[in-house]
Length: 190
Figure 1 (cartoon, rainbow, N blue to C red):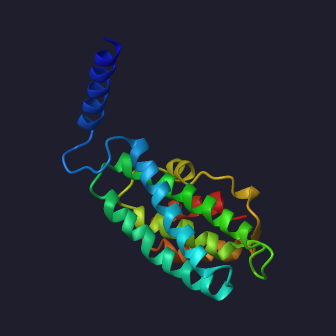
Figure 2: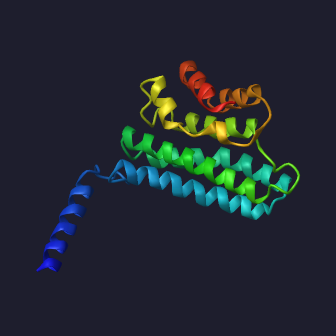
């Protein structure tokens, strides 16, 4: 009897969560979208750092490639979902990218130029995500940018200057309203 009730409850749960997704929407829930962004970014970022094998030149090439490709790829998938779920995907992607980058740098910390993440790279990462997701995710106010890009930036080991971070964000997020870009700069740059 318990197995039957559990089976009925499971089917009802799956049906109700699946019913929440619009036809063609790849994500039944906001949590699913956030997890997809988080896990996808972690996979690609980790793979490319592992391939670089603590070689600074190879890592730099991979970092450039990642910020050019991954945000666009994720935003294209997010376009098939709702703005709210797209914002969840953005938030998960940002968190996954920064966590993975911190972990990969820590793995290579004994190698020259891997002691700390460059402010310029941090700006490039968050700026490219903002630029790709603007118009896809829900950005009605600057408070949303602060929320979606929330991360303990002050705990990150960074090198470079505030100006390096700011310039990278402004460049990567061209076309995004100035108020949103300024909020991201104030949120991420140290």
